[in-house]
Amino acid sequence: MRATRRSLVALLALSPAAAAAEDALREAIRDAVGDAPVADGGIVLRLPAVAENGGQVPLAILVESPMTAADHVAAIHVFATRNPTPGVASFRLTPLLARAEVHTRIRLAEDQRILVLAQMNDGRVRRAAAELRVTTGGCLS
Amino acid sequence: VTAPLATPRIRVPRTARAGEVIEIRTLMEHPMETGLRHDGGRALPREMLTRLLVRMNGQTVLAAEFRNGTSANPYHVFFVRLERSALFEFTWTDERGRTARAEARVAVA
Image 1 (cartoon, each protein chain N blue to C red):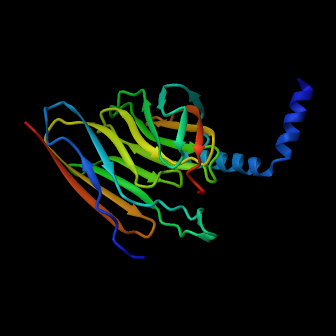
Image 2 (tube, one colour; image 1 turned 90 degrees about the vertical axis):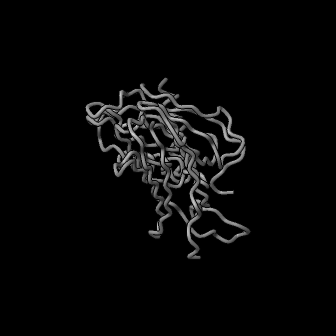
């Protein structure tokens, strides 16, 4: 166990690009939701397991919420963890929406994990993530 | 370089029953060029939409902020419950402050 951890640390140390990407992601998340505590669950993500064209990947986000004035999703933030820059989009929702559901199309450079944070009107934050493979990258080509 | 933005395409039903949930689809033709891509060694200049604002009878329904990971020709779908006839207004804004607008009406019988 200890040896495994040490080799993992060594691996991370060898990859400044990966460390920079982690920092950029952390910063983007902090910009979006500050230091609010984050709980998993309550979000369904629909996206392909394999994206042939990384330039146009369909993504549907559904957050469990009654969408009333008293209890609704105020914002949905989308991050691509292995793109040159992690930000994808932020959606500000209102109770005029029938449900906390948004469909979009996103651009992905390579195989990666998509991270979605949903911010409730009372400040709580929920999180969901999905891994997908990308056949042809859509960011740099 | 200062060509106007494209004309947005909106798909909404023309009529709905009171209390019905309708689907709204929007498509905006735009390269969403991040400035990170190269074409034959030449960097393609950045050209991005930053915002979409959707209002219903003057009230904000949805506001989106786009970053580099939003695809070219941004396409969005969302759902609204209608209690009365509605005028929807859509406004896209790019990084240089240019805007493109569209309207759609849904009559509730």
